[in-house]
Image (tube, rainbow, N blue to C red):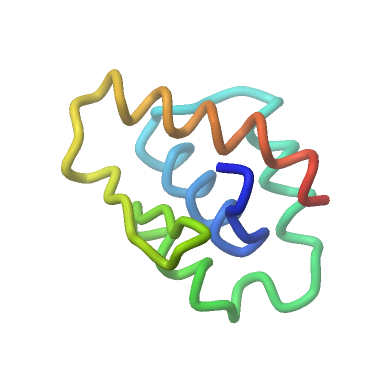
Length: 87
């Protein structure tokens, strides 16, 4: 997760909140902070993230739609943990 882009992180967090994998103030606060950055919603990483795809540093795609709920939860929490470093 250390190589995730701010746009992809924002999209993934939006996906995680929308699908009730993450909830609460911490997730919404991190998402709100990322959404304030210029160009976030127009980035390709953001749209990929909103669709549940994490784009790794090597350009590979990890789909949250194709993993068990426990793995999805771990991935969402990892992105949430990384988000403050992207602000």
